[in-house]
Picture 1 (cartoon, rainbow, N blue to C red):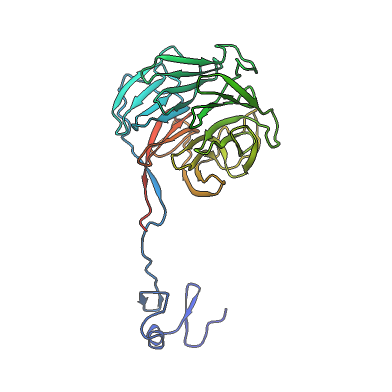
Picture 2 (picture 1 turned 90 degrees about the vertical axis):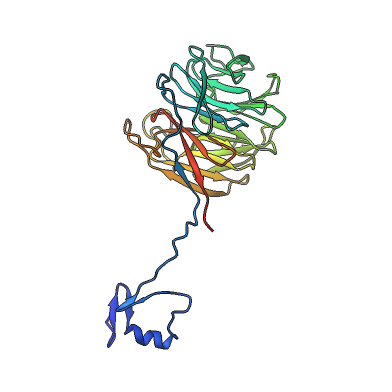
Amino acid sequence: MDRPANGKRVGNVISKDSSAIRARSGGVFAGCADKVMAGGVNVSYPKINCAAAYEVDPHWPRKPANLQWAAMPGVAVDARDRVYAFTRSDDPVQIYESDGTFIRSWGRGMFGRPHGMRVDREGNVWVTDCLRHTVEKYTPEGELLLRLGTDGMPGCDQTHFNEPTDLAFSRSGDLFIADGYGNSRIVHFDAEGRFIKAWGELGVKRGQFSLPHSIGVDSHGRIYVGERNNVRVQVFDSEGKYIDEWRNLITPWGMFITSKDEIWVIGSSPMRWGEGDQLGGPPKDQIFMRFDRQGKAFALWTVPKAPDGQERPGECNWAHGVAEDSQGSLYVGDIMGKRVQKFVRRDAET
């Protein structure tokens, strides 16, 4: 662009003398700038945080020195905002207050390979064990109440799982299990642990699954299944009838559905196959998305993907499990990071 007569270039703006401009505009630039500097226009924007954010609490929790953490696949929050961490260490179930105070631990020698964890409406603790091929229900103190599956024996029928990954409850107490690593199906039990039905098979079509890794049920009975290998979330009704799918938005690892039917899905941005037989590991980044029941994403949040062994507070490394407390804080468990972190919600200022 040629320089106009008696004008001067300021960045990409061609301006004449600012006093002349002020004179023509009555001293202000309508709808634009609130500050005029000699030689051009310098806009001073209002610094108002219009985005919500999550800030890590670097001091959470106050873990006793004698307790160890390892890969942290599961995390759950009960009705009193007590946080249950499920880790592959000698102290696999560790319980903390929301302020980080340690309550107790249990489970030494009881699990083979911890994976998913949920707390039901009565406060019972449910876990999936990939190595033992079981889904188990415990009291908050660690007393076994129910075991589904056959301990140590994989299979694909009413009494066997093959490396189950996650579970979720309907409001009536029915149980839906993602039988995910070895099998490719969802298994439905009633509140007493009686088998009702199973559906799904290995594949990429509607109603088929490839590594159903996480599962949730909303207040209307809709079932949401996060498939890592297929880079999608599939939605079904309570009978297993296909409703919808959310494809190519996130490689889903963990899932949590809030009391308002907001669906948190964590993992990585969409990935393609590389080496290995499980897509998404290692993840290329770490993202957190919140959806409504129709699949509209209305929140997106990212944290840095930490290098192995160099994790700093607020970074994640193979983020795997997620849960939200009544204050909107998120608790995230890492596999490679070997920890659970608390992220405190900061609302927008508008």
